Length: 276
Image (cartoon, rainbow, N blue to C red; front, side, top):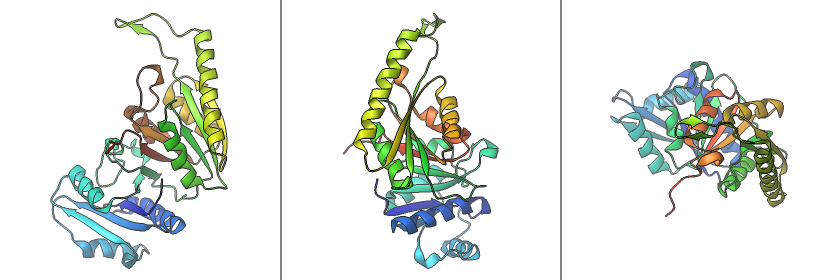
């Protein structure tokens, strides 16, 4: 993942400042351009209002591009801004105290992270922390896991560390709507061994960054939260779109739940983006 253009969405409220500050910080680190996006529903403001908001809070509007979509619903407005600016990363403020029912302060629901073709970095609006030193990367045993490792490596840098995590979901076996019990210890041990082998291969392939592995059994979201706390991570990386069955670690509902519940920044990478 190369970061050349960063889209920072704002609704001109102070809760969006964390996302703006994070975007400018990352832009400086990666020598990238910042596009400040604002969706107007309905037409009430213009570019001068956005520039005034940026200047009031210490940003230089001359150093950024400003994209404003007028008279559109939020989803289509953001779609147009993304289509015009082609960002490599979208940075937004989020607020876990409201359950993240609104990821973006322009009333964009969590579902947006599964719709855009660019990675979305959600920063908690009460934490001005933009240096990432340890990332939990949620792997699912598919080739898409490498994309997530690459994205995490870009944000943590050479001095950071990546913990590649795979969760084996030990949910009940259901046939015809009836539970017939959980998977046997033998089956789970085989799954652990296969997961460990896969994660070790990822680690060997990325010798340029410090990596370790973690294989867990249980509820996916709960295990991701626990891993983040135990490893003292400041970033969790998940993907959207994945595989089914027991390997369903990266479905959109999981990425949304992780973004809602974890106490650190979350990077959601679209691994299901269409191929051209």
